[in-house]
Image 1 (cartoon, rainbow, N blue to C red):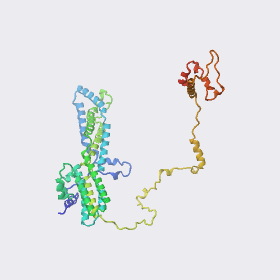
Image 2 (cartoon, rainbow, N blue to C red):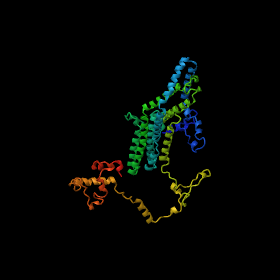
Image 3 (cartoon, rainbow, N blue to C red):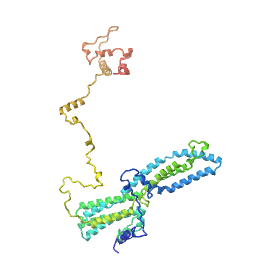
Image 4 (cartoon, helix red, strand yellow):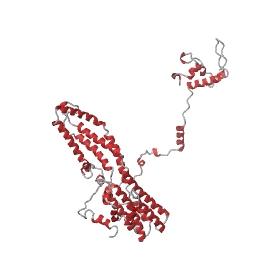
Length: 500
């Protein structure tokens, strides 16, 4: 039986619809087409779906919570004595008050946000061979048997590396390929390659081995001239490293989980809150007159809704934390393997050198080609967007150019600094003090007046703004307010009323 025939049997002869014993196991729930257009009740229709829904994940816990609640309620109503009822009512009031101390929303919000970011990162790390197969098809030449086997083997090594990683992280893939014998029968691995792979003494995952084989085979193709220059070989190795990086990142996502303590704290917080609510949300006898217990409904509707939201929130994190399982909305890893293997082989073999004949397109003579619209798509045609500023409306006089001279004068007036204000009284006092000190060092400001006589008048030349005349002479008198304190103290420490 030729290599790969078992893989063909597995995918075709045993595919759903061809064999009655094989059933389809579609995991990802796709509802994109249902919400393609926003309309009345768009999301409401999604509430009727069962597969992948929150109802399917939560109904067991919800029924268990309701049964426990009703059991406590019946025991309170029909089994307890009056004294026991009073004690139970105190316990209910205490639990109802203490339940609000548990920060369920705060803890759950951060945890689910972390898990969702991790889930998206895992999806982006799934290795896809598209870039690698384009590089191989465009740079490993030869339409003969040697060229074909080189290209097909290179891409088989890439598919094998991705398969070894997915087999290690996904239970669905491991169930499909539990041993290397299954890889040999499926056509991903030859018996000689399996012997070399198993003979390599390493306790670690060996997904990197096919990447090493890829690099060695690419170098051999370069020496044979199948890869025509070093730039092409460099491109092949860059694409290989990018592909290997995705494989490694996916493997490390599986290895390094969200810290266990964080998951434990969130789980304990949620379940402790609702164990407390089992007691604290019980309806008490209205005849006892407890505040907030004037009505006895029997079934706590809003407590059940709160349970649905909070525990459902926790179930969302539980499903997203590892999307490589077998839940309804987990990644379809087996479908990815099938697609990647088939597409990569087609690209490097069947499509190698297959280029359609060149011919003029139908818009050859058109300077502005316009693609047609169907009758269904015609109402969706929109005018070209040229920018939001094109919609600004201006008056006719506002669109007239102004003379540059007027613009320059206006600009000069705008940028001209304001006039400097005259020096205030406070500034003059400090100037006077500085001049007084400098004059005092040379024997004082002037001749001292005789005892009991009038003060010596100032010289006429001293009445300008830089001398001790004019207003400055007044400052040599008593301090403001009629005080006879020291002039120096008043000059150095004026009051707030004296500062201008």
